[in-house]
Image (cartoon, rainbow, N blue to C red):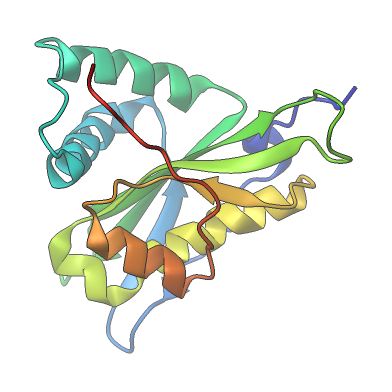
Length: 183
């Protein structure tokens, strides 16, 4: 049996400032419950960006999302990181986040049943050319490696062409397709 992996406790991310461009500095830090409203706001933006309108969201979508995200932020198998851009006043302003989890499928089929799952990734449009998303992914991948996870998966909708180009550029290969039929 494979022991559960705690991303939060076993592999704190490298929280040093990352130089992204000559003039831009990004601080990547671990999210806390205090960041819940920000993460909800970013996730709602992601939902609006990817929603194709085929399935109607619950009228309580935002509240239920908030509850789920709070559970995930506190889940020792999950790790949420916030990217903050330094501004001219030396304050940091959040420009994006990533949420990931370690998942164990110990059905006996694989030698290492653990995988990393990137559940959410959002960067504000004005910061997308600053390599913020790539640095968030790099930090999460580093954390996964440190706890023995050998591969990472992510999902995005087929209408999100920006995501397809982004993930392809980071070396993520397509391995499954979800098909939908309304009956």
